Amino acid sequence: MIRTDSTLAVQITSLNKWYGAFHVLKEVNLTIPSGSRVVICGPSGSGKSTLIRCLNGLEAYQQGTVTLGTVRLGDNARETALARRQTGMVFQNFNLFPHLTVLSNCTLALRRVLGMPRAEAESLARHFLEKVRIPEQADKYPAQLSGGQQQRVAIARALCMNPRLMLFDEPTSALDPEMVKEVLDVMTGLAQEGMTMICVTHEMGFAREVADQIVFMDQGSIVEQASPMTFFSTPTHPRAQSFLHTLLH
Amino acid sequence: MSILEIWLGILQGFRVTALVTLYGLVFAIPFGLVFGVAQYMTTGPARFVVTSVIEFWRSSAVIILLFVFYYALPLAGLALSAMTVSAMVLGLNIGGYASQAVRAGLQALDRGQKEAGQALGLSRSTILLRIELPQALVAMSPTFINQLIQLVKATSLVSLVTLSDMTFRAKEISQIEYDPVPIYSSLLLAYFIVCYPVALFGRWVERRINPVREARCAV
Image 1 (cartoon, rainbow over the protein chains, first blue to last red):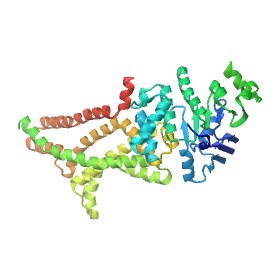
Image 2 (image 1 turned 30 degrees about the horizontal axis):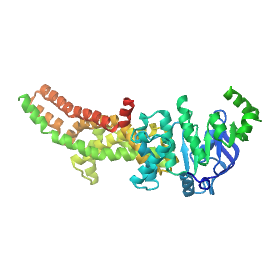
Image 3 (image 1 turned 135 degrees about the vertical axis):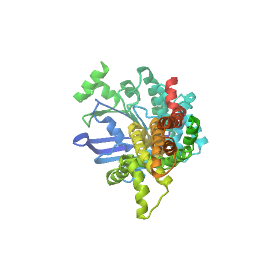
Image 4 (image 1 turned 180 degrees about the vertical axis):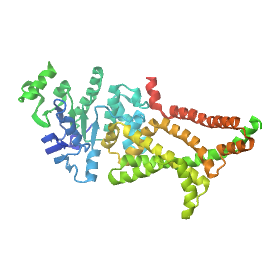
């Protein structure tokens, strides 16, 4: 069980990012209280993936601040590394290490970053593989698993590091439809335990059920931010209205 | 001179051929690894220096390097043995090629591999040693075997700096016997007999160290 007070709050202030001349994030402000679940959605190219990649330093930004808990990213390398260590990330394409077994995928950071002895790391990894309901796959290689199983391994791998904030970057977009549910179920379970979660996803059923805040982005800006109930019943921004219209009909 | 005698004569050079190959690897492997990784990791002036060293060894004619290092260095007061010069020149030349295979292998990896390591908090060196290099080296293993075979064949040049390898022995015999056809045909076959097992060994290694590819076949 994750204690709410052990999770991270996130504060994004006046964030601006350019790719060359292209202004990809425009004046983004977002407050994410500890233990809350935020779903970020919007058309492709709206900057949602870029935004969450800024939260663990995978993308650099030119202006603004990102604060995880009490640590401001980029203040110094050590603090950024610390903040990153408290953040788990799940990628669209899983990004499992294909040359390592499922178990080694999970234990690599435990052993190399935390210096945990092998036996302890393996038992912790098995605990999280059990949690994502694939303990029996521990000794296989990623290529031997289905997409849904691989993504659950990726979630277990991130959880092993005891993160206080989980970032999901379109975690089900690369999956066959019938595998989406097994991944969403794991994510829902995690949400129920009180983990701070930020998910970029188009799974509106998941958003409605799990999120307590929906953020809608368009062309690099947050154009609408509301509770799921408000967002799905009475979206105010025309771009959000047309997005929901195409998605739900 | 019977074919058997020709073969025994050529065989006397086998030890030198094998030694130049082995010592050549002592230069080639570290050079290829270190410079390939360095070219991948550096930018700006540092990368220019790394690239210049690689290009010197890769783009110079081996036969001329052999002559220069063997005959010219003593004039500068540095006399290296024929074996050292041969191993160094052949090794660093092949190492230059190998460095490009190492770099290409690293560059071809999905960017997500490095990012997943960063997201887990791994240091840059751990990402390189535990995630990137193992995959890059496995992917490039057929290229490395190619280069090993090229190294074996390139050792035939060392006869020019007085080492009595298989080619040197064949030339000697041919000068005595005035019968080049059976002698050089035997020499041709001798290199094939040395190189073909290396190719077979390469295929075996590929199967051994590539559980992922095997796994894909199994699914």
